[in-house]
Length: 262
Image (cartoon, rainbow, N blue to C red; front, side, top):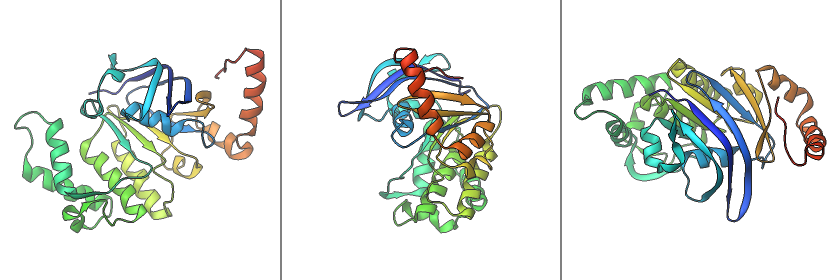
């Protein structure tokens, strides 16, 4: 399934606090988008709202995937439509092995009788080799006792196996050493193509040197403040976010609270 995502005027918050203040964003199949911005700007909130975290309340706007009202679907239905979220802090799931977890997830997305167990095992072992993971992880409980880097690699392993049409990586690169970062980036690039889109949420330039984005967006105060190409990463590296704050203050006053994107 193609992954054409359209977000229009999305407003959301948590525990009575407004965070997203009218997000507009479009991600087409085959595109890689990077989402950057200072802490507290709403990046992770956007990821949680898209995936359907019930702790967050949507207060306005709409989200469409291939023209379908995405916000009307529960999280499991969103996953079945091809949405994948790589968590910033992957949770441990005691009692559920990596092998059984992935097998069941793939079964749910496959037509009845369409999954070959032998082919699944072969593909899983090949994907683990690609991610440089010990085959013994197949029988370990998901993320239990894993290091931070192993958890992040496990997220990308799941993505490779599930082959989503749209992936959201919520600061998957945080805390990774050089080797783990390379593996995570290689996993995303392995899926890159006309049937796969991604939103890479990050603070750092280094992952975007390996996963070169088609578009870069900067979020500030719950909105997309500026959009551009990969050269925008260079600007942020040189100037930080101060120029976004200065620009936002000027335009907010001039436009009575609106924020103009370029």
